[in-house]
Image (cartoon, rainbow, N blue to C red; front, side, top):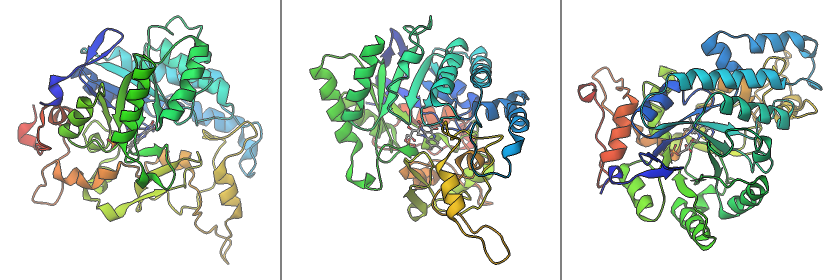
Length: 417
Ligand SMILES: Cc1cc2nc3c(=O)[nH]c(=O)nc-3n(C[C@H](O)[C@H](O)[C@H](O)COP(=O)(O)O)c2cc1C
């Protein structure tokens, strides 16, 4: 049996049971999501820092205009009142979604990953704007992530597409799912799917530094049996460390409806990481990986130790960025920056406790990855000059779909279609 023997059905629409997860910021690009949709699976774009993505891709000026508006805060470490206007956030998400959906071909889906933790100076209003921008832009599905999202569905309950769009949540425990379901019932809409993200995933984790004590298979089995007991028809999609097609089919045999993966696609040509960073992922060893608490979101995160975001002393630039600011104009990086001393010449020493997530994601300086990043080198061909071949998404997708007995068909330029 291979993954191609299974199907995922959401709202009567049939998909290949392979979902490529959201990777902010613009790492899971529109090109990657569209390639997956063309192949019949589900690809995600991400709405993280959508104004930056829009400026970069569509030549808008959201960030420079915001920077002008809040110029007076440049030399201050407190940023009260610095925030994104909901209209700007809406326009950026709308454009990113709309342009992507206009290009969509094939029977698969393009979903959007929406992180609750991106408070943007006004958590509730900017979240409402992001969700509505995605819905108005024609997105096929919304995956709620990085937060419990207890009020998120209510923000779109009156939207004409509320019932029709696919809705899902990322959780790392049955407990988190139960809490979300209570709020979903209040909003009159159960999710169509839930992504159970285990401790080996990339990006932010729903676990602390004790992540090694948890197991994706066990959590998935618990979620499946809870939903069966409650007679709830919600597709369960495990994620995190699913590296071969056989890892995936093992989970489907246990009752999962599909799987979500990401790390194997980070080295594809369609992925938004710079080529140099893809090479770094390909050369990574197991010892290069660390799970730490430097993200100002408060969540643990997995990344390579060589990430330039670690121990950087960049000054907070929330006038233009400020995606993590709370209503009071505060971000955990501010405290870490403030409490870090300067050297004898007045230069700020490296800030070790937290990273400036906005600045470093914008520069692809945080090499976040799943636990099995060090196995990427076994998935593709190495040329005589020592460089690796970067596969196209279709090659990785079809390897997942057809592989058996944990075999991986090394991608090479010859097998390119
Ligand atoms: C580079 C990278 C960036 C990620 N960014 C996000 C993100 O912005 N939001 C999110 O919910 N998950 C994010 N993730 C998690 C993935 O969507 C996915 O669930 C997980 O990494 C799957 O595990 P795997 O990478 O071992 O296949 C990210 C993962 C990677 C590798």
